[in-house]
Image (cartoon, rainbow, N blue to C red; front, side, top):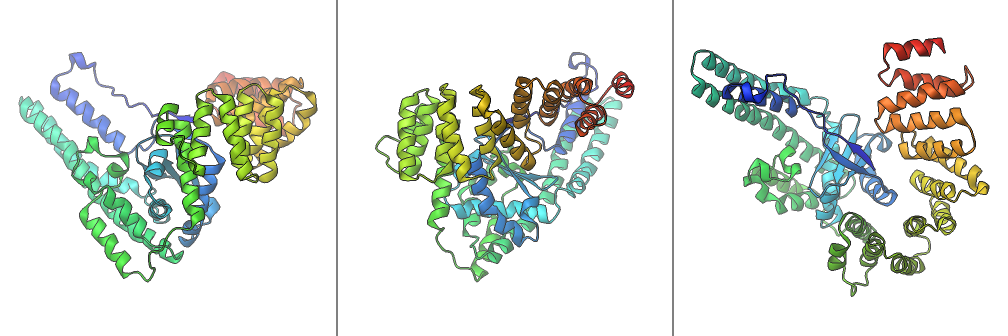
Length: 469
């Protein structure tokens, strides 16, 4: 897991206790205005090969239909029960686990993917500043009138004007945003049609949450705060679907099963075990139901029950790499590293190009502390990092391995890489400085340590020490 922290919003005004009410409100409105331009949220990013592979399989034809290379769009999973999906600069697409759980069909999820792809293809993120500037004009004008009223000795009028500033600014921004939403809807429909898929899923998804249109901002799901919903928008989508030559058809059994397995895994890992057991009762004999219950037993520290159920799943699908991955995870956390190695090795044999599965195997090999696995663990980590250079956990595992082999410079450099990609620049700098003291001057590793120092907000003293080295 990776944690993204919300950027702090601060106000340089005097402490609230010594500020008049109109000034406190002005400060609050300024802070809110700054927040309008920020999209970073305090969220937990989750990694899972099965879910990522499924979302990629759903998304790649749609992204390709938009004229974009599928590998240029990164899909991320956020562990949050709220319904939300959004894109950010750099062609990054984010989906909350809550949205995946609420999808009733694969076509609904694909409709949302198509819509978000429309935002990326149209460059809406790159042009979002235009919307913010449009919102700022009425906001700043009304705020200016409020300040003048306060200076003229009319604090009551000032408070009224400053309070309405946010309202007028927000309305202006939402009007701009609605234009973008309509454009993304129509673009998404084109991509679905190009891949011979119906837009019924997207319409059905919006229809199910039509009630969000009349709810207050605070009570809406995050998705419908950033994606304003309206009856006119739904009607336009429905007309487009009706005029389309693509007839609605049932999702393939493979896509339906993939969605149910994703949902079962999310429920099992993110919900309390009791809640999972209640939803997937022991009378449920479906594959997703057994999957969810196996994970819930594992979460509930009932190792033997979890392993027994996982073994049954493997007996049904011996070539399912994700079942072997789960078995390895349960065994490793139960302190049975040697058995975990065998299970994780099987998952890697079935999906040799999956970086996360390789990292799981390397971790089990390192935890075993058996020297016979060290070379294989190194090879697995290097293979994974060739695909995911920014995987901080893989670098951390590599630092443990190098430290065990008394490779001090390499171990500290791997620690620096781990902290750098985790966003801890202070510790990255410390480890990189220490790495250079142990690495051979002029080697690629020595130069990489210097790069990390220079990229980690060094002080003048750090730069001077770097020069001396």
